[in-house]
Length: 366
Image (cartoon, rainbow, N blue to C red):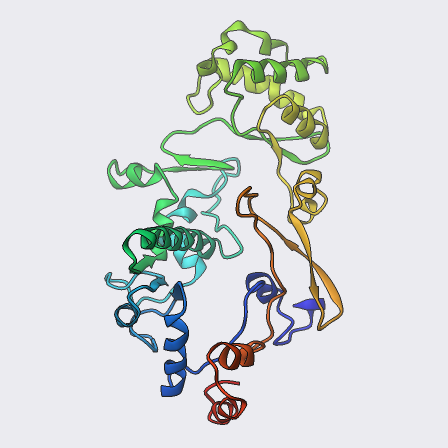
């Protein structure tokens, strides 16, 4: 909450996730409320609904598709509409555990550590990406067919897609997987990717450069500091001989030199030099450190959004990617509860002020 003071309009969670949206309140369990909702749906491209089957859902998504044949109705629920778990309760931790990511995340350098849950609504974010992709695909298809469709997405299935090769190893080979810090879980241990620096931080090397030119540039950067003597081995000019994950002798010698170099220098110097050489090395940053990242600022990632109701400008994360033909914009601040009720019901649907007043008095809206 803003300044750690709870309140209905002070939620930073709401400010982030509802930015750029409008807010209308409707009681969808009332006849008037559902009628107004249907009028709005008839003019919409996509309706996203997240009610689990049998849990007080105010409308049937299939019936809504029949009512508005051009509408795309996207149901995003924990276990889908028809599966045996469709009525089960859900939390983000449950989704990560049942779907597999939690079992694949952990630390191999600290013996006996348990599975580690990714934080900050990771399961919901992953499912949201699947939902956005599905909606865009359906909109594209509608250009050809002229018809909408009902899309049934189970968040559990989305989680299962993220664990990649862990699934066939576990399901087909019944092979226990090794959780490994900062890299894929697998049936066999692989070489570490993360190494401590002289100033107590971590560099993630994410594998070696694929091209010979980038590899030679990285070697030159390291050897300029009087280190990395073994990196000149001609065997390492073969990209296959510097490939991580295969437990090759050539890789063990290479990583020893690299680990010693990283341990002798500060993170920012290593990061800048390796990136300049074309190596995808990075610093493991804490969230607050990202605010000072020059690269993010150069790309305009952070944006200031005016909260005029508080005479306050707040810095928000911006575009996740830069698109040349359809540039992304952050939009306005998150709405207050019901802030656009009059604008939508009167301005868009044509209700009079008296009709809106009657709906407010009846508890249909506010």
